[in-house]
Amino acid sequence: MKLQWLTLGIDGQIEYVSPEGFATGRMIAVQIKSGPSFFQESQGDWVFYPEEKHRFYWERFPLPVLIIIHNPETNLSYWQDARQVLRVAKSTDAKGIIIPKSNVLQSTGAQTLFKGFAVIDQDFMSVEEVLNYLIKAKSNNASFPVSYFNLFCSGLTNICRSLYFGMDVAITVAGVRLENGNYPTLRLFFVQSGIDCT
Image (cartoon, rainbow, N blue to C red):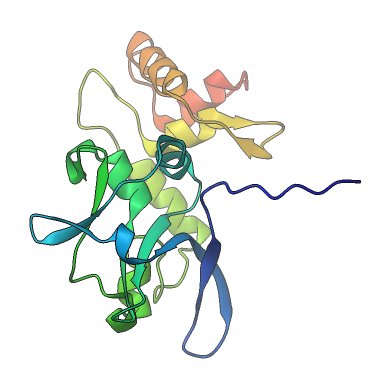
Protein backbone atom coordinates (compact mmCIF):
# COMPACT_ATOMS: atom_id res chain seq x y z
CA MET A 1 0.00 0.00 0.00
CA LYS A 2 1.35 3.41 -0.97
CA LEU A 3 0.46 6.55 0.99
CA GLN A 4 0.30 9.90 -0.75
CA TRP A 5 0.51 13.29 0.96
CA LEU A 6 -1.91 15.86 -0.44
CA THR A 7 -1.84 19.58 0.31
CA LEU A 8 -5.39 20.86 0.08
CA GLY A 9 -5.06 24.32 1.61
CA ILE A 10 -5.88 23.74 5.29
CA ASP A 11 -3.02 23.28 7.75
CA GLY A 12 -5.05 22.75 10.91
CA GLN A 13 -7.96 23.75 13.10
CA ILE A 14 -8.30 25.91 16.20
CA GLU A 15 -10.96 24.95 18.72
CA TYR A 16 -12.37 27.42 21.23
CA VAL A 17 -11.82 26.22 24.79
CA SER A 18 -13.95 27.91 27.46
CA PRO A 19 -12.30 29.81 30.34
CA GLU A 20 -13.20 26.79 32.49
CA GLY A 21 -11.08 24.58 30.22
CA PHE A 22 -13.91 22.81 28.38
CA ALA A 23 -13.64 22.03 24.67
CA THR A 24 -16.67 23.53 22.91
CA GLY A 25 -16.56 21.97 19.44
CA ARG A 26 -16.52 25.48 17.95
CA MET A 27 -13.72 25.44 15.41
CA ILE A 28 -12.08 27.46 12.69
CA ALA A 29 -9.70 26.17 10.02
CA VAL A 30 -6.29 27.76 9.47
CA GLN A 31 -3.81 28.04 6.62
CA ILE A 32 -0.38 29.29 7.72
CA LYS A 33 2.28 30.83 5.49
CA SER A 34 5.69 31.86 6.83
CA GLY A 35 8.46 33.98 5.38
CA PRO A 36 9.12 37.45 3.99
CA SER A 37 7.83 36.53 0.52
CA PHE A 38 4.26 36.51 1.92
CA PHE A 39 4.49 40.12 3.14
CA GLN A 40 3.41 42.33 0.26
CA GLU A 41 1.91 45.72 1.09
CA SER A 42 -1.22 47.29 -0.36
CA GLN A 43 -2.64 50.58 0.91
CA GLY A 44 -1.02 50.25 4.34
CA ASP A 45 -2.03 46.62 4.94
CA TRP A 46 -0.68 43.23 3.90
CA VAL A 47 -2.08 41.44 0.87
CA PHE A 48 -1.90 37.71 0.31
CA TYR A 49 -2.35 36.20 -3.16
CA PRO A 50 -3.61 32.60 -2.88
CA GLU A 51 -3.58 30.10 -5.70
CA GLU A 52 -6.90 29.79 -7.53
CA LYS A 53 -7.44 26.24 -6.22
CA HIS A 54 -7.12 27.55 -2.64
CA ARG A 55 -9.47 30.48 -3.30
CA PHE A 56 -12.09 28.04 -4.57
CA TYR A 57 -11.54 25.61 -1.67
CA TRP A 58 -11.56 28.22 1.11
CA GLU A 59 -14.65 30.02 -0.19
CA ARG A 60 -16.64 26.78 -0.07
CA PHE A 61 -15.12 25.30 3.09
CA PRO A 62 -17.74 24.43 5.79
CA LEU A 63 -15.73 26.16 8.55
CA PRO A 64 -14.38 29.70 8.63
CA VAL A 65 -10.83 29.70 7.21
CA LEU A 66 -8.19 31.99 8.70
CA ILE A 67 -5.18 32.80 6.57
CA ILE A 68 -2.24 33.47 8.89
CA ILE A 69 1.00 34.96 7.59
CA HIS A 70 4.01 34.75 9.91
CA ASN A 71 7.10 36.94 9.81
CA PRO A 72 9.98 34.95 11.36
CA GLU A 73 12.14 38.10 11.60
CA THR A 74 9.69 39.97 13.86
CA ASN A 75 8.01 36.82 15.22
CA LEU A 76 4.61 38.40 14.47
CA SER A 77 1.69 36.72 12.74
CA TYR A 78 -1.25 38.42 11.02
CA TRP A 79 -4.64 36.89 10.27
CA GLN A 80 -7.76 37.38 8.17
CA ASP A 81 -10.99 35.44 7.62
CA ALA A 82 -10.18 34.27 4.09
CA ARG A 83 -13.53 32.54 3.56
CA GLN A 84 -15.51 35.69 4.34
CA VAL A 85 -13.25 37.92 2.24
CA LEU A 86 -13.57 35.59 -0.74
CA ARG A 87 -17.36 35.46 -0.37
CA VAL A 88 -17.58 39.27 -0.43
CA ALA A 89 -15.88 40.24 -3.69
CA LYS A 90 -15.45 43.93 -2.86
CA SER A 91 -13.19 42.96 0.07
CA THR A 92 -10.56 41.63 -2.30
CA ASP A 93 -7.68 43.47 -3.92
CA ALA A 94 -7.78 41.99 -7.44
CA LYS A 95 -6.92 38.37 -6.64
CA GLY A 96 -5.51 39.19 -3.20
CA ILE A 97 -6.82 38.95 0.34
CA ILE A 98 -6.24 42.10 2.41
CA ILE A 99 -4.84 41.29 5.86
CA PRO A 100 -5.03 44.33 8.17
CA LYS A 101 -1.78 45.11 9.97
CA SER A 102 -3.90 45.58 13.09
CA ASN A 103 -4.86 41.86 13.02
CA VAL A 104 -1.81 40.71 15.01
CA LEU A 105 -2.43 37.13 16.12
CA GLN A 106 -0.23 37.37 19.21
CA SER A 107 -2.35 40.21 20.63
CA THR A 108 -5.75 38.92 19.51
CA GLY A 109 -7.95 37.39 22.19
CA ALA A 110 -10.18 34.38 21.62
CA GLN A 111 -13.30 36.58 21.79
CA THR A 112 -12.06 38.60 18.81
CA LEU A 113 -10.68 35.64 16.90
CA PHE A 114 -13.92 33.67 17.15
CA LYS A 115 -16.27 36.66 16.83
CA GLY A 116 -18.63 36.00 13.95
CA PHE A 117 -17.44 32.40 13.71
CA ALA A 118 -19.06 30.95 16.81
CA VAL A 119 -21.16 32.32 19.65
CA ILE A 120 -18.92 32.00 22.67
CA ASP A 121 -20.52 33.41 25.80
CA GLN A 122 -24.16 32.75 25.06
CA ASP A 123 -26.17 29.70 25.94
CA PHE A 124 -27.92 27.79 23.19
CA MET A 125 -31.53 28.79 22.60
CA SER A 126 -34.22 26.45 23.86
CA VAL A 127 -36.32 24.58 21.29
CA GLU A 128 -39.27 26.84 22.12
CA GLU A 129 -37.16 29.98 21.54
CA VAL A 130 -35.88 28.66 18.22
CA LEU A 131 -39.39 27.74 16.99
CA ASN A 132 -40.74 31.12 18.09
CA TYR A 133 -37.95 32.88 16.21
CA LEU A 134 -38.43 30.75 13.09
CA ILE A 135 -42.16 31.52 13.01
CA LYS A 136 -41.78 35.27 13.62
CA ALA A 137 -38.87 35.86 11.21
CA LYS A 138 -40.55 36.56 7.87
CA SER A 139 -39.73 38.17 4.58
CA ASN A 140 -40.93 41.79 4.38
CA ASN A 141 -41.54 41.40 0.65
CA ALA A 142 -45.29 40.96 -0.03
CA SER A 143 -44.57 38.97 -3.18
CA PHE A 144 -42.41 36.56 -1.21
CA PRO A 145 -44.49 35.57 1.87
CA VAL A 146 -42.08 33.15 3.50
CA SER A 147 -41.00 32.62 7.11
CA TYR A 148 -37.91 30.79 8.29
CA PHE A 149 -40.28 28.17 9.71
CA ASN A 150 -41.75 27.59 6.23
CA LEU A 151 -38.28 27.08 4.82
CA PHE A 152 -37.19 24.79 7.64
CA CYS A 153 -40.27 22.56 7.49
CA SER A 154 -40.27 22.42 3.70
CA GLY A 155 -36.61 21.42 3.65
CA LEU A 156 -36.98 18.42 5.96
CA THR A 157 -36.19 15.16 4.16
CA ASN A 158 -35.28 11.57 4.98
CA ILE A 159 -38.08 11.15 7.56
CA CYS A 160 -37.02 14.47 9.14
CA ARG A 161 -33.43 13.34 9.70
CA SER A 162 -31.92 15.68 7.12
CA LEU A 163 -32.43 19.27 6.09
CA TYR A 164 -32.16 20.40 2.47
CA PHE A 165 -32.09 24.03 1.44
CA GLY A 166 -31.87 25.53 -1.99
CA MET A 167 -33.52 28.41 -3.81
CA ASP A 168 -35.99 25.89 -5.23
CA VAL A 169 -37.39 25.39 -1.70
CA ALA A 170 -37.83 29.14 -1.14
CA ILE A 171 -39.45 29.69 -4.55
CA THR A 172 -41.81 26.72 -4.12
CA VAL A 173 -42.90 27.81 -0.63
CA ALA A 174 -43.52 31.39 -1.77
CA GLY A 175 -45.43 30.18 -4.83
CA VAL A 176 -47.69 27.87 -2.82
CA ARG A 177 -48.42 30.58 -0.26
CA LEU A 178 -49.29 33.13 -2.94
CA GLU A 179 -51.39 30.62 -4.88
CA ASN A 180 -53.39 29.53 -1.85
CA GLY A 181 -54.10 32.89 -0.30
CA ASN A 182 -51.18 32.94 2.14
CA TYR A 183 -52.06 30.06 4.44
CA PRO A 184 -51.06 30.40 8.08
CA THR A 185 -47.61 28.92 8.64
CA LEU A 186 -48.62 25.63 10.25
CA ARG A 187 -51.46 25.00 7.81
CA LEU A 188 -49.07 25.43 4.87
CA PHE A 189 -46.69 22.91 6.40
CA PHE A 190 -49.49 20.37 6.84
CA VAL A 191 -50.87 20.95 3.33
CA GLN A 192 -47.43 20.57 1.72
CA SER A 193 -46.80 17.43 3.75
CA GLY A 194 -50.08 15.88 2.61
CA ILE A 195 -51.47 15.84 6.16
CA ASP A 196 -55.23 16.40 6.47
CA CYS A 197 -55.61 19.30 8.90
CA THR A 198 -59.36 19.94 8.48
